[in-house]
Amino acid sequence: MSKFSFPLLAPATALVIGLGALSANAQSTLYNPIPLPDGNEVSDSLTDKDIPTGSGGFARDYLVTFEEGEQVVMDLTSEEFDTIITLIAPDGAAVAENDDAPDGSTNSMLFARITRSGSYIIRVSPYAGQGIGSFKLKVTRLQPAE
Image (cartoon, rainbow, N blue to C red):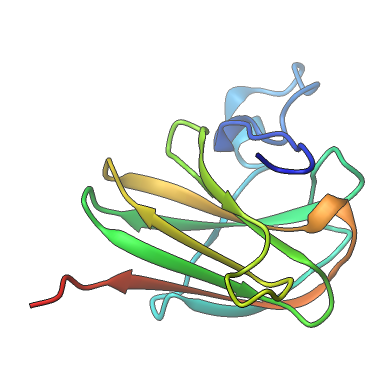
């Protein structure tokens, strides 16, 4: 269980609570997760212009498509903040989350077996809502041993 909480809303509703006067089309254009590049790796920065987490910090979401049965590892590193990585299913439910990698650092590493095909969100955020700055995210699709 995480040491903190933040909203895990369905992607299309993540930033539209309290915007009832807007049409559904206008609301859906307010939230657009960033597609993960073809190389499944990105160097980026978390800023105070990203998604408010509700715990005083910010998060950045990446969109990636996984197929049922895939096994993946997501590696999130930063020298500027203590990272948390969360995998969010197409229905908005948190599938898995990791705070600290097995190497004892404050970076995050998450292993997951995908149980249903679809578009998933990989959420990058700081531990306890504390911190912004540059980070690297890499997603590796594991291959079965032969």
